[in-house]
Length: 464
Image (cartoon, rainbow, N blue to C red; front, side):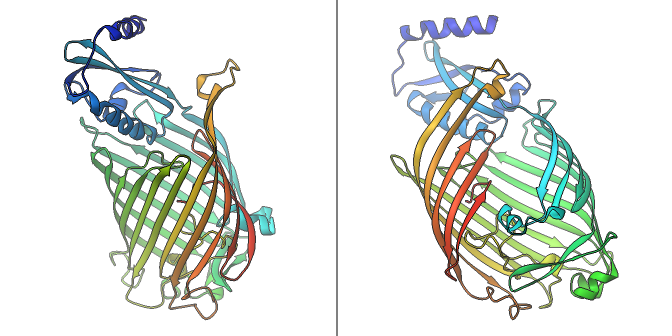
């Protein structure tokens, strides 16, 4: 209450004190409101100004927008507002008001064992559904820690824990994480033919996976992040899998166990990671699977991956986004085991218009583009249900977009049975995107690909 009274007094006398645009002022204090669970220093770390900084008043709007951007991308808050009030001659007090998200999500696991919703809908195979429950805390102890416990049944049985803690040092520039999981399957995607995945199913478990991983992250600046992960991975398959594909694991093995190492660098300057409209993302990583420390004849492969996305506001309600994604596999043989080779069609490495197929290979390059028109500007709705403000108040917007994608997969192993490899593929179409809070995106898209095949698809993530 005393803090609230102070705010009212400060903003009440603000009109009495005039600040010139060119004048430099000192940040006397920063007051954070609305952080019911989030520690204050977590919010302060994301700001582009700190107490005792001297800033020009004309720069405040720019610093405010940068601060809102970094706070938004923590995924801790639904709404953020930053203002200042003149406190005395040459001094200001800045007030940061946030509305926190709901952080603890006990819930049901329901996911599809397919590359996307549309490929599952084609066959509606209910055996390829993962189900179970999870407990996830997105802001454990208020320190922006993320803890996930998962118990999954169905197509893939899985149990695991994932713990991530940013800011373990005083300056909150160093983070750490730990991930452990065990999974087993009765059905395995052992190969692809005619660019469709092939599966083998048995009554017994025919594949087991175990991973133990430790990770550290360095964030010396607000927008830059270095990450290093070191782990041990074990894959065990039944002899029957080798009968279907003797190159599923290295050298006809039924067990692959290896240490792996990953280094990545990310520069994130997008206004919203869930559905960005302005800014860019640059992400590059090097993955090393295997060092020959456990088995000399096991996997030893290096991957280079690159992602660059650019988002521009063209003016008015018009926006343009484009992105490139690429992978290169360094391997001493043309026979990359199938378990380790993934081309286009998996996760974010995909082309619109090719949702129902995969293009396996050792290397790929993809380009995506979107021209967007904002049909419905961002609107905030207060339902006033008397619930927590984490749910009563939400925002939404709607975008119409035209898109064009193109990609190329290099496959030196199975191109003879997967004709979409080693040739350029492209598609174009129109879409309608619905965007709301908690990073929810629903996309309805119609497309035509190079083969002249039309399609209508539904997606639940931002494409670029």
